[in-house]
Image 1 (cartoon, rainbow, N blue to C red):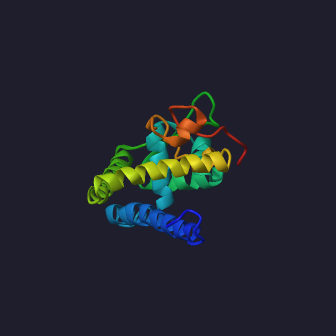
Image 2: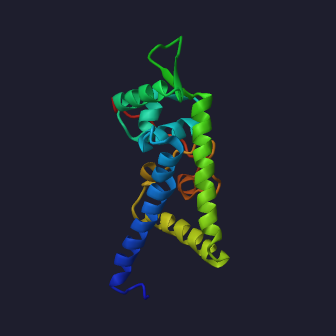
Image 3: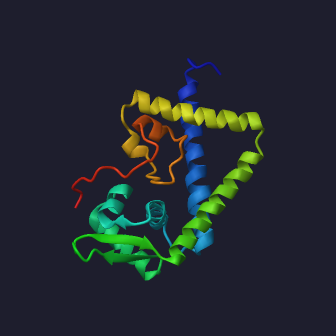
Length: 190
C-alpha cells in the first residue's frame, strides 16, 4: 500500500485500535480477571503497578501519576488496604504526608501479573518471524518518536511513569533527555 493512498490512515487507525485492544484487554484486563478472580479492578492494578515501580509513593504523587484526583487516590488506596495489598504510612514529622507502600501480598500480585503479561507477549512475539518482530519494534519506536516530534511535548500524557525501572531504550525518556522516567511535577489537583 502506498503512503499517499487514501486508505492508509484508515488502516493505520484500525490496526492501532486493534493493537491497543490486544494490549489492554487481552494482556491486561483479561489477565487481571484470571489471576485475581475479579477481585481487583484494572484501575487498582494500575495503582499497584505505580507503587511497585516507585517503591515509596506519597498519596499526592500517586494521584498525579495516575492522573486522578487526590480523593480518588485516597479511596482507591482504602480499597487496596482492605485487600491487604498496600499500607499507608503517615510521616511523623508532617502528618499531611501519607506514603503508600506495597505489602508482600501486593508485591507478589503485581510481580505475578507482570511476569504473566511478559510471558504471554513473548509467546506471541516468538510465533512471529524474527524480521517481523524487529519491524514491529522499529515501527512502534518510529511511531512514538513521530508523535512526540509532530504533536509537541506529549510525553507527560503517554509516559508510563516507570521510575527506576525505565528502559534506556524508552523513546519518552529520550525525548525528555532523561534515562529515568520520573513522575510529573506536582500540580494542584486536590
